[in-house]
Amino acid sequence: MRMFNEKKRWFPLGLFLSMRIAFKNLFRRSITIRYPHVCAHIPERARWAVEINYEKDGAQRTHRCTACKICEKECPNFLIDIDVETAPDRSKTIKHWLYRRGGCMMCSLCVEACPFDAIKMGHNYELAHADPDLLEYDLLTDVPAYVRPRTPRPATIDSQKKQAGQTKPAKDAKAGAKGGENKRSSTTGKEASNA
Ligand code: SF4
Ligand code: SF4
Image (tube, rainbow, N blue to C red):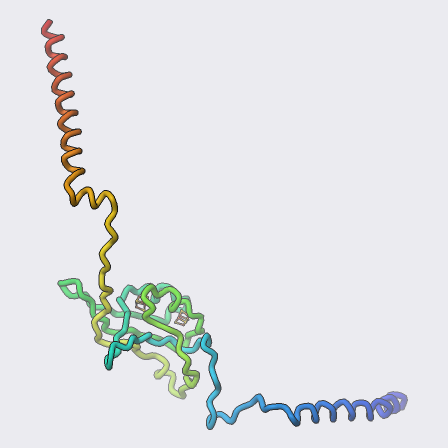
């Protein structure tokens, strides 16, 4: 009975507080959206599924995957499987770049490990599928691997000397001097033994 009286006493205060919260939120901007009619704005650094980072070369799209398989080794869940075919002239063809999205925890370790910025974390968050088979797919199929154009190394002092042909004669001269010394010592040794 005493507890009931206590509750009764605090009822007007509780009512006032709840009404205050209700009025406060009545004039606030809504924080929910009418999905799927309205899509959420995704921050630039948000991470969803792994995608190929295509480069636009005019009307064409080119990938930058060299099939080095570093991402395959880095994935902690073993979700990447790259099947590469190497021709006798050492050119590579990516037969399959398999990505098992169902087990991906979007950690971005594969993206960070890629030395050629060939992959990125996508922004598409509508990834659900009723069929689990659709969660395994190839990102690249039957495409030649990217070959990075080689940049010439800056010339060092040694290489400049080599080009000018300065090092070789100097070495030859040293070798010649050493040979002469050796010959001289051997002849003097022989002379001494004869005496
Ligand atoms: S995506 Fe990057 S790390 Fe993976 S195979 Fe291609 S180039 Fe190598
Ligand atoms: S984001 Fe993480 S879990 Fe997903 S494929 Fe890359 S390394 Fe594997």
